[in-house]
Image (cartoon, rainbow, N blue to C red; front, side, top):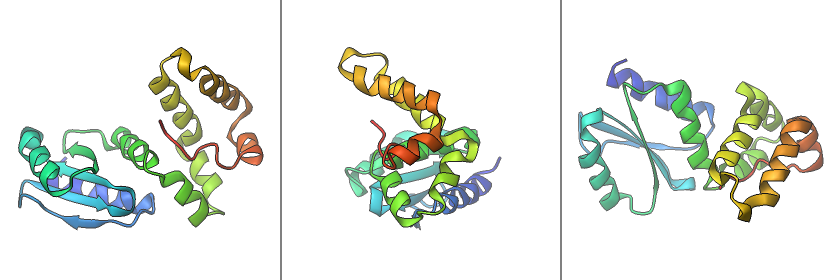
Length: 161
């Protein structure tokens, strides 16, 4: 896939996630940035070999932002979850739940996102004893199903560690 096509597809992805963003290019013809100011996230679409230069420039211009790097060689269908996880770490799911109340359950159901969120949490917690309660809570939620979880605790999917 070309860099131009990947850039376009990332814009479509962010549009589907319904996040407000601005587009810029910190290094013309090498990289494009989608900046999601509301959540402090920047998605950089770039050529793989330019990571160091782009990362250094981002550290200067967008200090403190969560960064996601996507190249034309990446599988966007998998990389999109990296985008969702970083957005979630900044409050995205709570914002989404409050902003798009009716669509929220549908979004959680799409591509099995609810279970993917739980799986990612369990991966991050890695069976560490300090997270025993959270691990048990998420394992039980996965068994119960996302619809039952949402009916009992609407905020269950709001966070990502």
